[in-house]
Length: 281
Ligand SMILES: Nc1ncnc2c1ncn2[C@@H]1O[C@H](COP(=O)(O)OP(=O)(O)OP(=O)(O)O)[C@@H](O)[C@H]1O
Image (cartoon, rainbow, N blue to C red; front, side, top):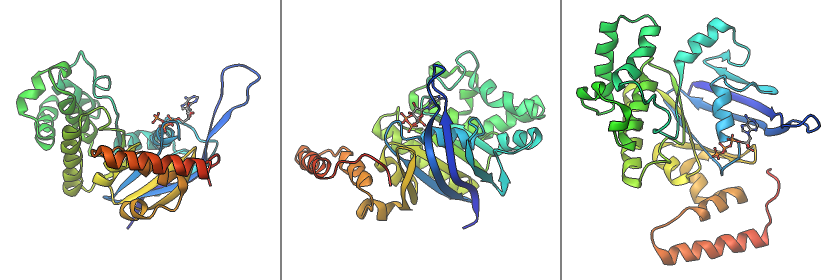
């Protein structure tokens, strides 16, 4: 598969408040790739560095070393002109559909403004908005309404439509269904998959939840404290994880049956007690 996004040996350091404290490295040489029309799941617990990877891919964080290449171009060393183009090609959908949409604008304006800025006439932008709403299964009348008039799942559909507006090649999905109930999660994931089949868009799909990642992606990278500890087909990683951290992540996933849940809890506790996990690697 042709690689669209190639992240190589990425290191990111953040400064801490206070003159004496030294910057802290939060990514320690991360490598991953996403093919054209592919979804790579990126899982890890809170604070492992998932969002930092996403923000670096979007050009919002400058790495201390390593590279991010998109369609062969180095994102981190791109000129302003190239960055403008890349800003169109790489879009994002955030976790919280309640804060990621401007509450003062109608859905139609939210979707059409970026298109008008890009040079589309108002009339063409409105036609495109109708097409975008159709793509995410919202009625054309949604354009007249404000974000607060929609449910969480519908707002996330608007956020997906906004990301699709410039016909991107890659969408960074940062926990896009974590704020939704289970049924709505499945519907939004199915929608993302359906859009991918139609458009060949690629997803870097960030989640703390392996079950969600299994639903949407074929390959997954597991991130632990700023290191990718394993990458492979989701099926293999789930059926025979090669790293203790992945085993813990699997055992931590909730299951509906309370007896199975208790068995998992005991297995996880036994694993933690027998093999304390301090460092990645
Ligand atoms: N701008 C920043 N300045 C300083 N530290 C930061 C900054 N952004 C992130 N960090 C730190 O980097 C580490 C990784 O954070 P990041 O948000 O990437 O993790 P995450 O896996 O996405 O977590 P979550 O799922 O909770 O969002 C954390 O320790 C966080 O506190």
